Image (tube, rainbow over all chains, first blue to last red; front, side, top):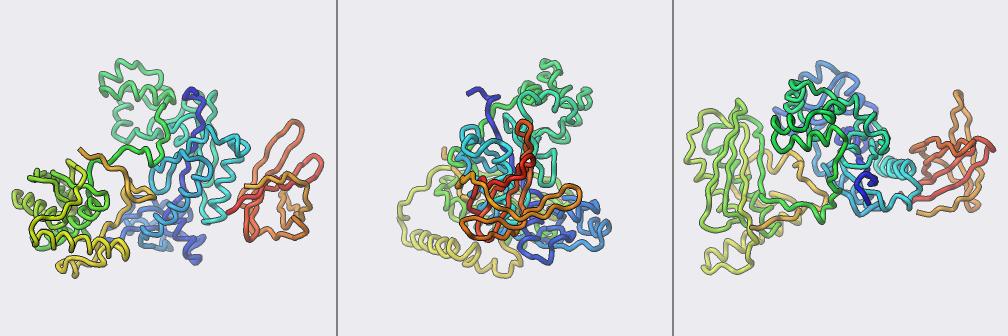
Length: 411
Length: 81
């Protein structure tokens, strides 16, 4: 089957975090609410449609949002709740095709080419999915249908909330003619500005632009940009079982306040080391390279890496490596973000450590992991982390997937 | 999914602006009170206009179709929630 005969659906949950909060607490329904991070320096992560009517936007500070909407109710983020609901929605989507690609916690692509006839046509299938999500979770979503992922995503953005937009193959060119290039997934603000400098505002203009010029300006993506302007996208919907493997395991955290004391930095590094180590052990991998990422209060971000003599995944070894990197740096400003990443991954062996001391440490780590797997992260932790106010990640990674564990590439 | 495609009896409130709101329907000699209309859409089939309603009772999702030409109702589909 040729690519333009495919039927691709993009589902985008409307104001997902805020809507889930409104469903879990009926007192919040119909009211302007905004979901914020847990930290004191947080911004609005998402706002309900009632709040959006006042101009409250994602990324605004709480102060700015309250100025626009004094009755705004601030709700702290509940990542576990959102990932739980998202996982259930993804399970529901698998009733209609095995080809479901989770794009983020609130977005998914479905290739329904083969299964469409079983459900009585496009429109009917879309309304069936929308109705089941609405009835089971009380949530609305916008659906876009098109011959490829690029256009399906564009279509779902066209009507919000609770929209349904179908871009048929013969309507691609007229639809794209006036759509600003920035509406296409993959064209960010910077690229949009550069295209504007070349006189390209709309997808129609991008699709007609001389490919040689685009390639000269943007290199190998020039050809791809022209194709995007023409609504061409051959990328398949990739279910998680076939998803590209991750090549690193990492975590970062924006600190609740800028820190400069070494002891405070070390505590955060220990916490991050435990998070990275735990994930690496769950994947059954170890890494030979440890990266440390630091961000100053003025948002200057830099990093340094160090190769280890052997692959590691024990939290204390990762911590020692991160501290060793930190000790080579002379910090100029207080830090607002810290990150640790393990790369150069290989499958970790199950062999027992040779020396009794190392063996005890290995067994202790395994016991801690078992308890934390069963009762939640940081149930058992290093004593020096006990007085940390908040533990664990406060954001849902874009790489989050419902099944939790992703494929891991080993070198 | 179960697709009975059968004629059924539906109680409806016809409101201002040609608004149609199904309230309950009979199925297997039992009256099902409609808790929520989750979606509705229009379909043209030749000269006929069909109004599709997705409705829920306490246990399932039903697709009811109202034929605007002859005023009949059909139960088209039953889906688990």
